Length: 343
Ligand code: MG
Image 1 (cartoon, rainbow, N blue to C red):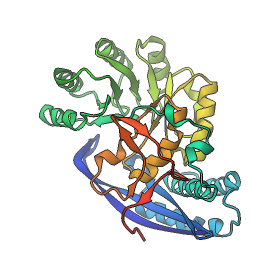
Image 2: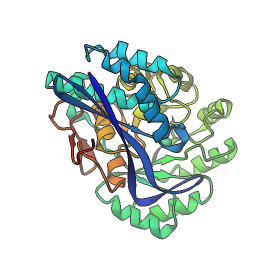
Image 3: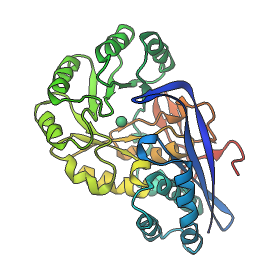
Image 4: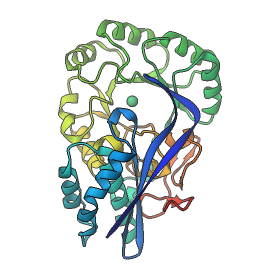
């Protein structure tokens, strides 16, 4: 097998406000693994909070290149990925790019879409949410227009102008909302009060209300919240899931946090056994990583896979949305075609 990789910068359609300022672009790396003339594509997307950058991903991929290139059998996923995982403790996005490329390759070698390999039924895909980031009321109203064909909104809050944001949205639409606080509510009492205020506002669930390591307060809130609570930043990998059961009703699984499709699938099975709801989410990604995550979406309850809708320079054609419902194709692997020559 042969591994190649290329850094890219993705540009957002609209500036993206986060806790520490405004971003207009984000870093990704596209990985390709070739075997017997067939190419599998993968992607690493690096939001600043994961601690990865072009440099760290490229350096990790350079280091594990011999491991990949010495492999004779791409189907031996479990052993290849555990060797990659043991190479360094972090670098989850870089690891995900390898995992996605291998899954794509394996699907292509079998001429089968990954959603079939993982046992899903394409009828069962969820609707994706469409993200409404934190912004001024007039921009939020414009974003609601952008979201016109999507049935569920993902609304970002941070504890500052939350009621103004919700009132602005509710003045123009009554679509169901998933609320994502991104650890932004700093104390449990205020969080509970805000959840009660949201109770009659058609909210499906609240994601990562409190700081990620604040397990005692998460448990306190879980015992009192009248709305379901989901973990995002608190739960990264398979080994974290056990901690969720008495603090959250569900978890947000993202390929970039958990090292890819192989581990995400194991997390889905474990979460089901523990009666946790499952949201499959994304970072700012092209249709490559999004289509990879979408292959697992029939096995989940909710999806937040709007990454390609929010960027200008998507490098791939992949899965599509039909009035917001994830629509898987019959192409083998992760179901993507490269739009621009990325090598
Ligand atoms: Mg989140």
